[in-house]
Length: 241
Image 1: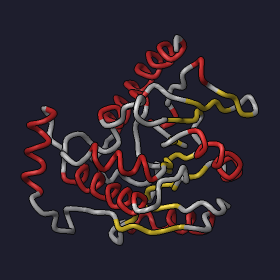
Image 2: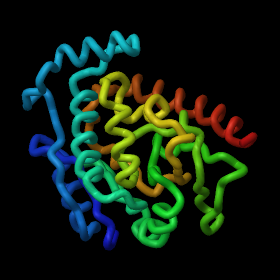
Image 3: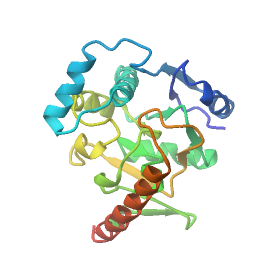
């Protein structure tokens, strides 16, 4: 059980296949706050087509409707967190298919994390966050944590942050451009303290279809191959930090 950690869960009434996953999270988190996810397919998003076109003009590739919905959903949570007084207090953010692998470790290290980082990724890029060698710390010779290579941070299914960072991300995403989980485009490690852990202790169930993009076997195979190639590159680079 995750105890005394306010946790925001992005969910939608249209995610029928994820109801058992959501129930599982409810059983294991004592301070769970539900935030309605945004799906343009079912909900009206003002100026949606304009937002899609603007994203393409700024990045060369347009966001799809669900990527915009995901961004808007996390913005809703950041706004809630930004209302808290400026402290180092962290709030955990999860998505409907998030899977917590180690509740005890989160409870034990949450205060250490919030005392040392502005944002921390308990899970990122399917477990492939690369921690900078000179700064990494070990836990039970199983996990390492510390400042990551920012370009190895990808995903929004398990992270925590403070009010300062919530305000920072709101400002950084004010002009729509990249997907919300491509943090390398919106975070500057000289302005906020970023942390991550590897192997990840929050992941995804991967038993329901993605709500962002359609996938098939070939696309998944290609995606996994790309991850392995770039992960090797990132681990080599992180060794020299």
